Length: 101
Image (cartoon, rainbow, N blue to C red; front, side, top):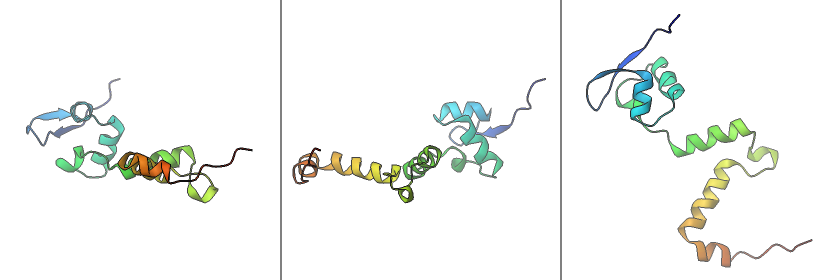
C-alpha cells in the first residue's frame, strides 16, 4: 500500500509539490522538511537552511560529545576550527606546544 503524499507550495515558484521534492530542491533532508511541515511551518520557514550552530549541536547530541563529560564538544571544536581558519599563523604560532610523554 502506498504512503499518502503530503503536498506543499514551493515558496520560490508557487508550484505545488511533494515534501520529498521540496527537500531535493533545497538540498535538505526529507525528515527535516517533514518535521517542519508537521510542526506547522509553511512557506520560506519550511525550506530555510538549517542554522550551523543547531546542526553542530544536533551532531554533538547524537554522538554524546558534550562539554559536561570532559570531552571537547562539537560547538567548541567548531569554534576552534573557525578561529584557526580566520588567522592560522597567529593561532598556532602563539600557542605553546604540549610536551610529549
